[in-house]
Amino acid sequence: MFRETNTRSIIKGVSWRVVATSTTIAIVYFFFDRLDLAIAAGMIETVLKVGLYWAHERAWFKVNWGRKKIEPFNLWFTGLPLSGKTTIADLVYTDLAKLQIPLERIDSKDMRELVPNIGFTREDRNRHMKRIAHLIKTLQNNSISTVASFVSPYRESRKAIRTMVKNNVVVYVKSDVQTCTERDYKGIYKKALAGELQNFSGVNDVYEEPEHAEIIVDVRELSAQESADIIVKYIKKKYIKI
Image 1: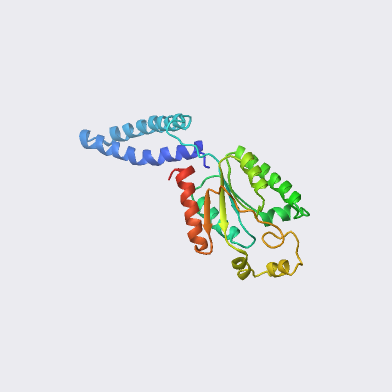
Image 2 (image 1 turned 45 degrees about the vertical axis):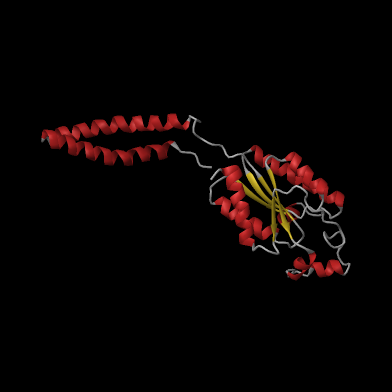
């Protein structure tokens, strides 16, 4: 969010007064045919009205009437590994950032690099989700909204997120193992199916589909951009009121 500085208000006042004073000088000269009187009137008016304009601007800056505060929200993208969560979340973040609202992007890959050796057991993942929820809550306390993308395969961890975070919007990026395997450029599904990776959501560990997702985008039918457009439209209507 941007705050109008005193300097900006003064410069705006000066630029406007150049136009307004020129008009005043022209009018006085037209009626009295005296250039000295016209210039004097213009200069006095300039000094007085620049100050009045600045005072008027600063007074309105202190008045909250007519302003609408954007309540911080959290977009929580969940789905199978390689279902397209990160791609869609990145598109959504880019579109929402254009609205110049306080916004942060949180992705599972970045967080695991920041907090290594988390583990992939149910207990490890649930504990990690509570850390993320605490981070989001802290950002929201500073009026910052978030776009977060995590597999988050367990309902209890998603419930904990919803309990701890305000205005939580669950986006279920719906897919299936076959579709995700086809788009698996890393070969991790192949390793999981071969038993080389354990606790892999959707293969040798469960992925519990959300029962109360606010938004469901089926990537088997929608492109990443189409999915992002649906989500951005929802946020604009629900929280930004555009």
